[in-house]
Image 1 (cartoon, rainbow, N blue to C red):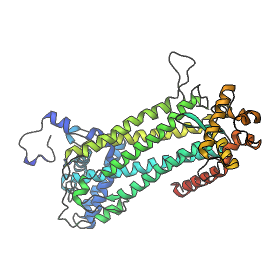
Image 2: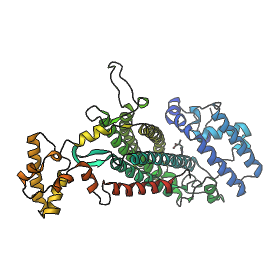
Image 3: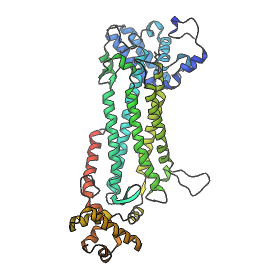
Image 4: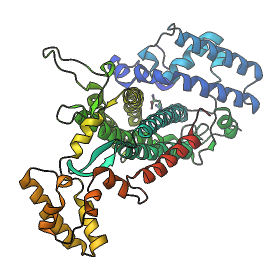
Length: 465
Ligand code: ARG
């Protein structure tokens, strides 16, 4: 078959080359971006009198037909066409005739064409993922509102540390995801520029209007340097990084869900709808969704490293290496979207077992810091010394098989005679939580401020408004 670039060649391509060189099997995913980009380009060529109106009309109609052929499964994809750009252009000439179809590629190169298509894909995916992140923040805030008084142990080193509310713990994730959201929006703003009109790498002698194409496609402006524009894949790298960091965060949440659903913790019950069974052990109920999301994190990191390495040391401008940019981004985008959708749905159906969480709070002497703080505040004992005295009280409780909060006044005074009965109330779990009224703390007062911040964040960013 005759190639579009056949002119200077005497021999036909090897079949090996054809198969190795082709990207159509995966870049057909960009068909809609390619068609929309070509439509905007054709309109601009007509407006600038580079092609006539009749040609432009035929091109636009032909592209519409190709779109429906692809969407109805009638389009024949062939590796002989190399990539989606040439496949569509070839089909266009079949439909409207080469004397018209052959004019579409005026003042354009596949280098700026692929840079445009891939950027449009990345920008669209960026906003879809941002919306899913916002949905997850909404769910977390909803659950948090219902659990302001649900006590659970807060951990450091995975050891019981201090009592906190479940609302407070979930809000930590909400703020984490709000940063992910901001990063996505920020990256979208930075990269929302059209590279079309850069041509092969040095611009074009045709009197084109790049701003018109940019407006037509919803960009906020145009890229300033053609050489950079055709060789820049920062937009894809930023998205791969943002997805990687989102996965870092979802993997931490999922790890906790996995732990919490185990019989050792028993803090949560994941609904049957989002659990799986074992083929051999009839009693098993497994948290596969959370495990899979945790597992997909590895692939997301791999995709980021893959493209970073592909782009490293590439001389300017376009190099065919860059064809390797697509599969990793397609894969990460698909897996981020699927993971966020199912995580959100699963979170909304989780049952929190308050009694087990409360029971857990009663082991590990969670109010030890409160006793030390009491000695500092009420008895003017230096913190270091208060820490030591409290340690002694903990050791006593351990030897009696009790939790620190269960020691009576006599027992406490046997360690530190100055302790009064008012210390007993402070050692209660609820008082320990409520005492932490500092901004960012776990008291109801502090958590309400955090909930307000998150709700304000959701409201000001809600894309559905
Ligand atoms: N399939 C190519 C890619 O994905 C399109 C650009 C090809 N440009 C070229 N000069 N060969 O990168």
